[in-house]
Picture (cartoon, rainbow, N blue to C red):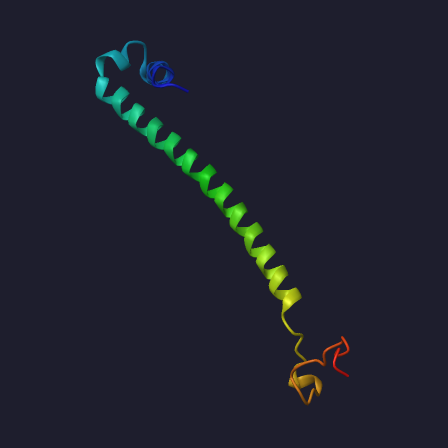
Length: 96
């Protein structure tokens, strides 16, 4: 919507609530309506941007977590009776 659309909506809505001609007699109410509409529009734009950024961050965190999980050694908790906390390397050493 444009400012012109908000202005027309302000007059229509105010006159609809308080009677015909009320908006014309109370321009301060039209101004308050316009300020509120602008703030609401700005909040909606910011919310969309945050939502998009949040999705991008979540995807990045998942990708990093997946890479870290694949690259890190597996650990055996001591509570499961593991002497060493590291699992043995499943690949044979090329030097043996």
